[in-house]
Length: 253
Image (tube, rainbow, N blue to C red; front, side, top):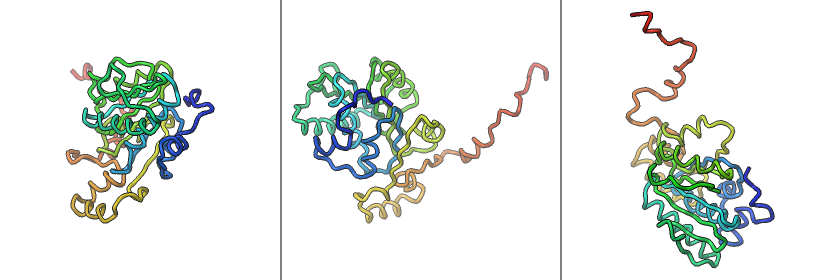
């Protein structure tokens, strides 16, 4: 737990309420109050993932001076939208949003902290170190290569990592960490049923139009096999064993 910076300060929920005028729902409160070093958020579409992630980023930057918060999104447009949203919360703190002078998509705080948004291409995310908080937004759409490139940025200073996304099939690092990442991760799941803000009539319309399989992924947070999968991935995993020795082709020739 990376909590030395937090001593004596507002937790994420009280920060949202008192400083930002935002009232989080129970599931949002779990995410904002969490102080674990590794977290996974598997959530329904339109739950408010990016909003809560932006609050988490602003909370860290404001409460821990000279901290670096990196936000990785799949494409540049999403990256800019995230930083714009964070900038709106920064204004509620009485701070005029401005960039750090080095990164095009960034926010600089009076205490020296920075929030930097990066599009999720492997070649564009290198060059940062001593990251206090790393948020990967829409993680299921970010490449494995990018994920491997950003993880070393947490090695100095023991930074925290949160992966946040709606599922996108049984593939990629988001699925692998959720299903097989072990006890190091805190897992938070938020289905459409957990979000009273969703228009139920619209949700029902979506299900009827797009089908049950799509609905279970987008609103029920289920990791589904892709359409291109010939065999069920769980059956494939269950069939793999180390008990059978590989053939020694040299002896057969």
